[in-house]
Length: 262
Length: 202
Image (cartoon, rainbow over all chains, first blue to last red; front, top):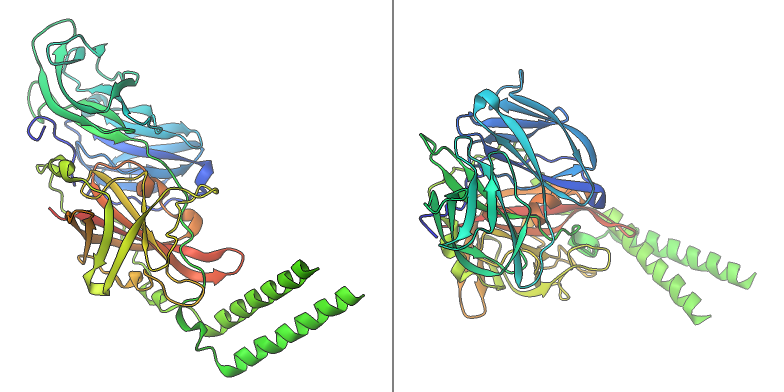
């Protein structure tokens, strides 16, 4: 697991900028840099910088975007003119999306995937995205077994397949063949979680072909109600303020009483 | 009839709270107006492998923040009826969001604690004083321990909090602490949320 399946680790050097949010009306969108020869990039959403300095293999956290159409522009990091890519993205409320910049820089494009956010107890849903531009169509199978995902070509993303949660030894093979392009030993799939296995990099040359297993979706919630108002110097309110409040209270009570009497 | 009286009494008390609140001014946390970093300068370490600690993932039962002298037990919560992350039943305790990651796991460990209760400061009263680089220790039932290092302290209007990056999947081993901040109103509670982000220490 350690050697073969390089989980993208603490490579999130870029910040996620704050974008306006309205909870249930929002979509969750993350960005994946999967273009092997592209430089680090900044990404603007609707003209506002949303991701900064994402480099190859980086996967951002989910940005919260209002449902609807958004203009996504990808710039070489540090620049704000002549985007490498510009595309309209249409997202629906409550859904998760992964937007990957794929292909070599000369013909870079965006692949938009809808992520399955909901997990199922005891199960794990997995899909494969083929984002390695010089790799042939591939199968992904348990070691020596029949393919779970077949004949997946570059830029294509499989449907999710459901597996029992657990640890698997998988392998990537050229479609229909038995030789192994990449062995993926000890792939751990947690109960209730969904994943995308991203095949990225180059078979010939650098950065080398690799498979990243990234978790998808998540159980969203609104922010908790973590305060009840009694903190700080409520007690140190000046006596006259308390007196004023008390007077007002008496007044209110009087009015209420009057109303009831009437 | 008595319920009407009760109601009157209750709203009067609330009124008193609000008035007193106005006089007492904003809480001291306001001083820590969050910086607005356009880019977080986190050093990348793409070669390391966070999955190696996955085997030791555990449900956090206790949190210690040495610099704030916070030591608290952690209870397990889900969501309330309005779809919000639930809060700890006791205001001297911290809540762990059971749909998020376990401690030591790839993903986001989400903990929430109260700024205050009806009477005064609660467990996360001083949370806004946390600074980048400071440590947060989380332990489990059988003594397992993981520490996290603060990378960001920000406050957001309550409906502008980055819920996608807090509750959504992430490829990092992250810890997020949530509490209240800002101005209190009887109808809406506090109008902001304080979000402390930390990354697992290797």
